[in-house]
Image (cartoon, rainbow, N blue to C red; front, top):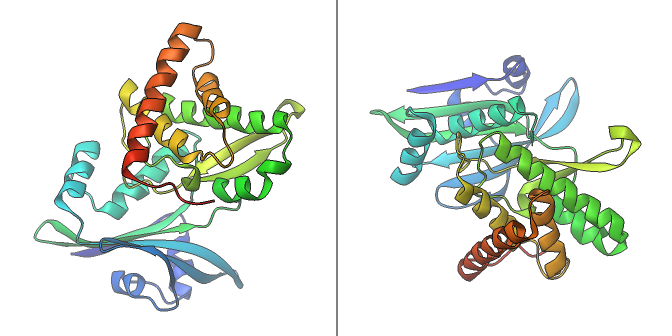
Length: 269
């Protein structure tokens, strides 16, 4: 069984680009692959919207592992494709006023009740990837602006956790940045997050929060962030805590970051 589900008024817009059926989308020509493995492929699509060319992203899934299908079932209580799960995650984040790509549509193909293929298309985010912003600007920013960004990042993570959401892939390279100068006349940063197929819903686990922060700590490379700047992230996240509680929490975050570092290398930036 194949189907395609559209958000808002995208069905007619995509039809104008010759994209109607599952196969139209999954096998469309003209896409440029940016990241792929044997199970997933991320591509750039350039489509016409109101006469103007715009950039979209398509993530395709193929024959997902059983563990991924089980993970999806345990998190939403029903059998869903990888694309449908990520589509739902985006909408859940939007409902909680957490920055995320705007979902356009998703499609899926099931055979004998098992997912064989699926895809999701999203609009591109207008702001820069946080990784690129840091690489291009960090050395030029005054200390006060660096601390403002770290404080804003901690507030973003806290907002995610207050929504009982865990982001196991919370890295600098999975965050996009926006700058809001309207709040009380002061500059502050806000963020959008990508790569949500491992997002966990309805979790209040302290251990999950530590793991999220540990992965973010790991992705804050020594080239730009010293020990004090990483600790500042945790301090802002757990603001109001006693020094003893902060030190205990920070040690656990740092310890988990070391575990991640032992298993993988950070993306260079």
